[in-house]
Image (cartoon, rainbow, N blue to C red):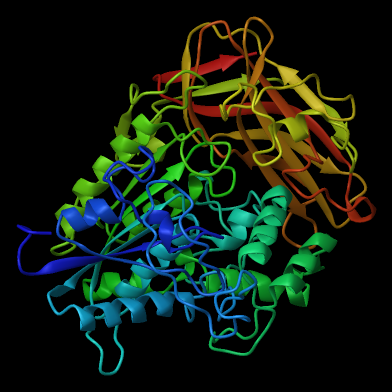
Length: 580
C-alpha cells in the first residue's frame, strides 16, 4: 500500500479446522463486521503489512464461502484425479498442528515469502488465527521463545516472530477435548504441569458432540493421518484409532496410575507436540531474554476451548516474568454457544491491533491486564460493563456462596434421561430465540436420578465474573474404576425461565489419582454474568450429561454419595455473600 514505507512487517493468518486460506481474506476492512472486522487481509495490507494465508496440509481449498472473500487462485494437489476435480484429495494429511509438521509448514512458507518479497522486514513477523489457527498461534510463540530465529532454514531468510494473536485457542489440547477437572487451581486446570508431557492428572471426559463433529468435518474437508511414520518425532499419530479408543471409554488406566498404552500415547502426543502449555521454550526464552508478545482472545461461552485455555498461559508466563508481554481478552466469543456480538468483537480487535502495533517493531516487557466483557442474552449486546484486572482471578472482588447443603446418590446412569443435557449442548442444543441467540434455556426439571437444587432469591444483584466451582462431599460406593460429576448452573428468572450460565465436569479415576471419599470441586467454564436481585440460582449435578460429554461405562463406574452441596462463584461486588 502506498505511503506505508519501504520496509514492511509480515503477518501470517491461519484458518480454523475444516476451513481454508480464504477465511481471513477480505475485499474490505469491515469483512463480517465481527471477528474479521479490522482483522483481515485487506486491513493489514492497507496498513503496510504483507499478508500470508494458506490452506493447511490435509484440507481442501473449496474457494471463498462469504461475499467479502476474494476468489484468489487455488493450487492443485498432486494426487487429484482428474486434475482440479471435485473429488480431489489434499496432498498431505491432517496432523492437528503437530509442532514438527504444520508448525514448520508455516515457518517455511513465511521464509519463502520473505525471499520472494525482499522488502519484508525479517525481524517483524506476527501470526494470528482462530481455533485451529489459534492453537497454532500459541505454539508459534513458544517456538520463537525457544530459539534466536523463528524461521531458520538453509538458503532461506531467517525470520523473528514478535507477536502472536490467538483467537479462541487451545493451549492444552488433551484437557480442552477431554477435561478432567483436576489442576493446581481453577485458572490452571490442566492435563499436567508445565515442562511435562501432560502427566499428573487423569484423562478426562470426552466432549462427544464436539469431537464427533470435528472428526466428521475433518473427514469431509480433508484427510486425517492414520499413523504414517515421520516427520513428527513423537512417532505415528493414528487419529482414528485414538478416537475409537476414547469412544470405547473407561477404564483408561490400571492401578498405580498406569495408562492404557493408547491413552498414554494420545496424552503425551497432544501435550508435548500439540500444546503450547507444555513447551520448554517458555523457560528457555525467559533465560535468554526472548519473550514474544501474545494477545490471547477467549470466550466465556465457548464450550470447545473455554477461557481457562488463555488463563493458564497468562498465569504461567506471568509466573516466569511479571512483565512478560501477554494480555487476555474474554467475552461472549468463540465457538458455540457464543453469540459473538459485533460490538464486542470490534472492541477486542481494536485492542489487539494496538497491542500488535506496540510490539511488532520489537516485543518488550510490559505490565498487561485481562479484559472481560459481560455475556448478555438477546437484544444487541454492547461493550457496556467491560472491566480490566491484572490477573484473571482479580476480575472478581468478592465471593458468592450458595449453600444448598443437599444430599444425593448418583447412579452411574444418573442424568441419562435428563432433557437438560440435549437442550444445553453447544452443538446440538436448540437456541431459544429465532435467529441464533446462543443462550440455552432449561426445558424442564432434572429427573429424580440426578441432583438439582434452587437457591433462595438473591437479596441483591451479583455479577459473576471468573471461573467458580461446584463442591460436594463424596463417597464412591462401591469403589470401582471411575466416576463422573457434571455440573450445570442456571439463572432462574422470576417467571421460572432458567438460562444456562455455565457448566463443568470432573472425572474421578480411582486407580491412583482420586481417593474414594473426600471433597470434590468441579471447575466451571466460567462467565461474566449479571444475576439481578430476586433471581435464583439452580445447580444440577449428574454423572451423565449427554451429548456434551461421553457417558461413563456403567460396569466400571461407581455410584456417588453426595452431601454438603454448594456453589462458589467469584463476583465483582466486594465482600462475602452466602445464600441458602
